[in-house]
Image 1 (cartoon, rainbow, N blue to C red):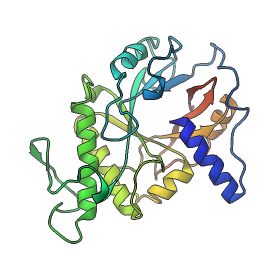
Image 2 (image 1 turned 90 degrees about the vertical axis):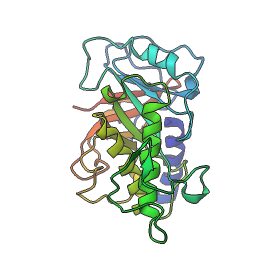
Image 3 (image 1 turned 60 degrees about the vertical axis):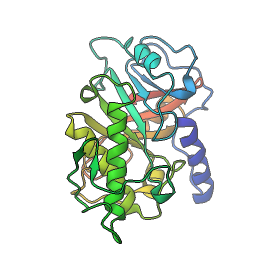
Length: 269
């Protein structure tokens, strides 16, 4: 996750003539054990030995795409449970993240109604499948359906007990219509919140701007905590806590940096 983000940031920095925020190189030594930092993992870490007892752990549910399952999800969830009890930071000991996308009609599946998971969905954008002008309604249903699948068919027990981070990156499939992308992400957030789970958003300011742009204050995405990628050291991650959050009313709760080939995360004060 972080490797792709750093690549995008470097490209953006060249284009915009900016300098990336952050400290030392990504190959720096892992943080000292005295630092209460977490680690996030997913399919790229399958089969690898992971440090035990991170301050907190965030596990990726998918295999790089929104409609797939991380092949070592069970093993990584077991590893995540080595995080200390009680929690060492304001972050939950174990959280999850999911890939997001809005492929539109080019996807392998696209909704044709407001019905999914055996129930009719209350869609704030109208009726998906009603004809011309229903793209935002169907985008909402796509996001809702992907979140439903993540919570019900990927192997997550008690999904309502987790904080679910929405991983929003330009490498996945998105529409030029940012409002439709927002509707898609709102569908995901609404589903997770409907089961009693908490939700946050992972991205960078640049990528979020490209995908979603400015989110209305009344959106379900407004106020969700932000997890910002892009730092290359712990000091850089600490500095990024003071960057603007991704949506109105939000705060930067978590920042990510790369060290020793792993993604580490700092819980912002």
